Length: 199
Image 1 (cartoon, rainbow, N blue to C red):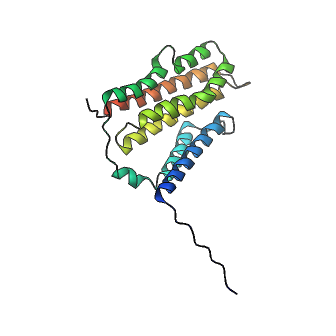
Image 2 (cartoon, rainbow, N blue to C red):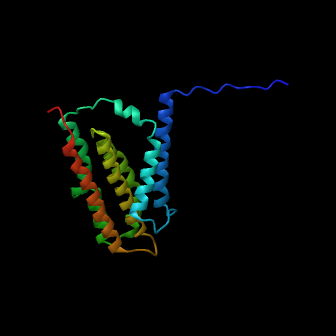
Image 3 (cartoon, one colour):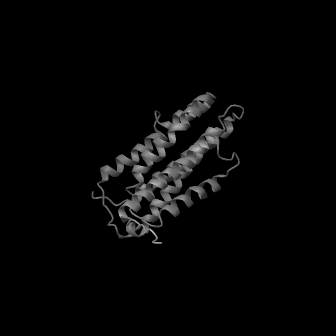
């Protein structure tokens, strides 16, 4: 009897990297989505949440890390850096920004409004705006620090969401997490000064 043998396909390194990044994004999205939908344990601490997200990022970046180390540092124009970080700063400090909106809803005790806004604001603030600014940082260590602050923002929004749920409304808890959101975003913004620019 002759055994049938099938050759294993050769995996392109670039394809492997793309798959890894896709899994990373899916895992990160799953963690935050479960929390906003109430599927995560209510008692999960900030430290536990950040450790969970950090382990996802760490495990997923084992392969690409060596590639990152070989990349040249990109020196962006000052205007490009300012624009990226100003988009984050707008959300934190502008009267029309998202954080001001959250505070307004908290002052009005509009828990339904807070619930609705926090479901989508993580995507806008952390993933899109903070993600864009983080790419301009010029070392792996700074990017990891920025990721920690960005994950903190997700945890803060989850805290606002949990303290706004029907039967669990707690305006003091909402205000606590809004302030922590400001703190995490401001620490992220402080990393702008580390970037070397062309002008």
